[in-house]
Image 1 (cartoon, chains in turn red, green):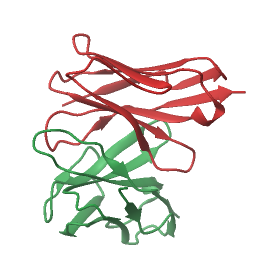
Image 2: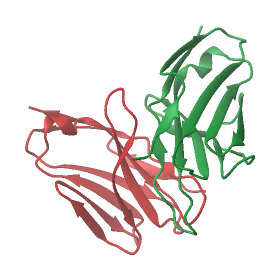
Image 3: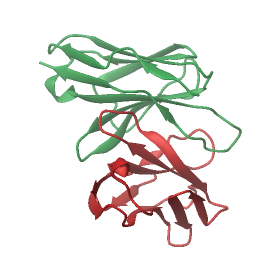
Length: 112
Length: 115
């Protein structure tokens, strides 16, 4: 089955700097890659997703890139702000009904 | 906006008790999921359901069972609670669209303590 590895497990950046979180997956059939943000005490919420027919997707300060050949995808957050502090999860899924497989999460701390 | 509601935010039970965690979604989603979340271990899938009356084991089903009698409700059951089941439990639902994977929408979670 699918296996998703996520790095780093913790990340501290200065406010205004960029943050990058990387994930690798094992199943070449995976074609859907969402990213979730979980603030302290709250539910995981979808922040951006990408499908395998696209190499990059942006939404304001966040972007996701996908390299299908290398089986890795990354989340980029630019101009980080204290409210970006949270746990971020990557996930991978194939077509249809199979559940998403999640990485173990990255705790991002943005230091003011 | 998708609403996934878990019946309790916090729950305290004793070892050996039968515990029910309830989850309701209001978007007519076919798929529903139960995860537990522990520090350093991420989100681990316990059980999921493709549709009403259907259930599939996830990665860590031991000690748990589920029920999906109605499309909007997915219940997680701890048959005989043990202290190692103390955890945060998250429910999620998802719309099934042809052969295209879709985002999962999460509830607020139930923090369960077994004493």
